[in-house]
Length: 231
Image (cartoon, rainbow, N blue to C red; front, side, top):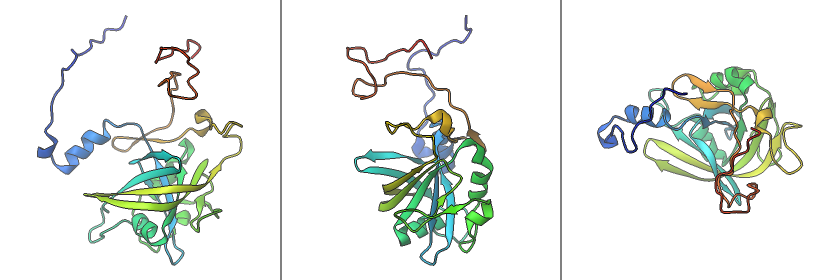
């Protein structure tokens, strides 16, 4: 029997976030919203210089039309007003969201470095630039999934800018997607972002029907949560 004692319902330590520093709020958010998916964004400047950078403020925002969004914070380099990714995306109005897998963690970390704009980050990280079908930017050849996107909008949100893109073409590693358009997350093995210099590389998958509205739930009763004892 577990010795863990549950806290009484409603018991909590409160934080008035308006009195905290931006870094304190960052730590509270990033230590709670975990693991976060990572958008490994590749883009290029109008002059043809390639850029790659990871963003863990990222998710799906619409499926019809298919849209993704990621948030770009202010650069850490003194005197630099905007990150190269945001500058290139605003100029070219296109980008690629690549999904990194566990075996690519070292290459991903290399691309988190803020290089000078004239550095080709495919070369810097030892990655393969593969031409896309609908956009001029290259996708990361080693990534198991890549979504070609055109810029829908870029919305300034204080110290960050939210970039929304409409997916116009998708690439999946052979064998990753079943005939019903369902990728297998166990084969994908996506990286997740954790607080500090940490990532998650494994998924503990359990089966539950999240909602009766879920077309894949397979439930036709008033039961909302379904337990599969075979898991």
